[in-house]
Image (cartoon, rainbow, N blue to C red; front, side, top):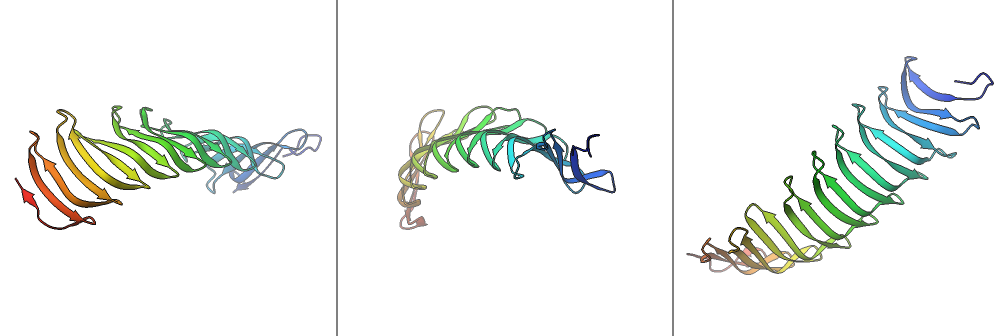
Length: 231
């Protein structure tokens, strides 16, 4: 499409003369791209944003589900995601919120349940998990909490399952040393065992609710080995 003065205002392809497909461009009075809309082969809108003079994504962009609901939105610079981005469920609820730096996840990243209650929080350094990580149940109870170093679990981690709390240490993504599990209601010991580079090694103890030993298992390199005792 052209203006009465011959200035290009709009360009794009149509299927069957009516269904927009591919990249459709709108032009400002100086001839630069003012807006870009991208359609799939069925004419369904996929994205809206801006191209620079080299046809690279720049500025704010919005992406869509086939239903027309927004799937994500954020900013680009020279075709790379930057700054805050928000991702949505198909019903419009927020699913994820986080920041990009030079097209890489960087900083705090948050995930949400459909009711927009916090589901997970993690920290990234240029696409690599680094720092605090935790998950919550839909009711807001802690499921898992620990720390990452250069993308691997390290230090003390705690897992909360039903009435049980399990905790122990990771070294370079492998369970190491003493791990224990307690009953959340009475704080009684349920389990204790030792890990060596992610594998059970030595005796593993299980306990009744009253604290007395239920059974003793024995492992070597995560394989049952030696005498097992039941009480």
